[in-house]
Image (tube, rainbow, N blue to C red; front, side, top):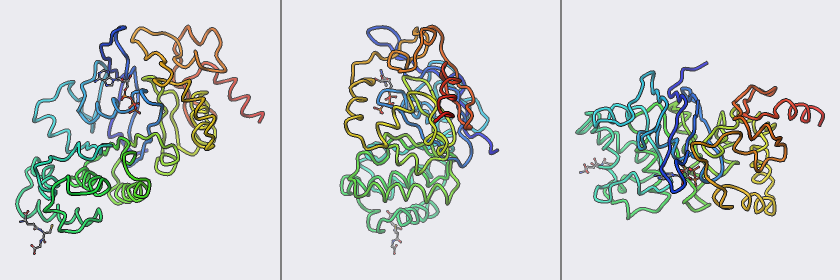
Length: 327
Ligand SMILES: Nc1ncnc2c1ncn2[C@@H]1O[C@H](COP(=O)(O)OP(=O)(O)OP(=O)(O)O)[C@@H](O)[C@H]1O
Ligand SMILES: N[C@@H](CCC(=O)N[C@@H](CS)C(=O)NCC(=O)O)C(=O)O
């Protein structure tokens, strides 16, 4: 069992909203292990980006512990603490402009993470030149500015910039969803190559379940601020135990457009489904769950081991396992 790079313990992030405190992340316990690719899926508004941003130090948490490389992280970082943390954790954003300074050349942007670690001069420049080539760009691109590159090229730079200082974890938040379909696969392949080459752990946030199934060793499913199912990707995709996971997979993987529309109409933001308030009790999925019983709305379920080596937070787990075995 490899060591955990990141440990989340009862992690919470609440935002003030008109109706009260909105629980974007609500009591998440999770380890990200060295060298693993952990997929994070769930509908829009389930708290995936917020969780990624908290781990990357871009969003303060409201409560709970964030432990990186065995060290408890503060809620608010000083400049020095942020620098130290970012040697271990880097992020690739959906919007490739987000990590690049428009006034800096590509070569300078690539060197920035090295400079902040005290690596400068020819050593930093040579490394940047190496990475430019490694992500498939011509050396001449180093002299350009972000707006002079295509979206795909810019994302390659975003990736190079995340990997250049050899972090232990790279968080990818929807890294290809803003790109042309024709370049998405190339970027996914590049991420996979680099992850394997450097044995970097990756938290991979995506709506595209097929991509997560392809890339991730383990997958976590989030629903309204909570992890409802977690486990090895093949087991989770082949034998989902949580009714929400089953529904998510059915809608996305069957390519069933009608089902997808029904789900969209019944889920999260799209349906005006209420975001969870910090005071809500019971299972968050109960109002939409075909298996729900009155008890489901009374107490919150917790993650429990299933018979297929995953964990699911569902009060009806025992019945679901029996149903699955009968099939
Ligand atoms: N800075 C903020 N202030 C107030 N509410 C926020 C803030 N950031 C996120 N939220 C809310 O927190 C919830 C979780 O948002 P988050 O972006 O983490 O979800 P997500 O699963 O990443 O969604 P998507 O897949 O659409 O990116 C949403 O209800 C969102 O509106
Ligand atoms: N003046 C440039 C130097 C850039 C540089 O070193 N470029 C690399 C490629 S990324 C190179 O080998 N250039 C060709 C050369 O120096 O002969 C800068 O620092 O911005």
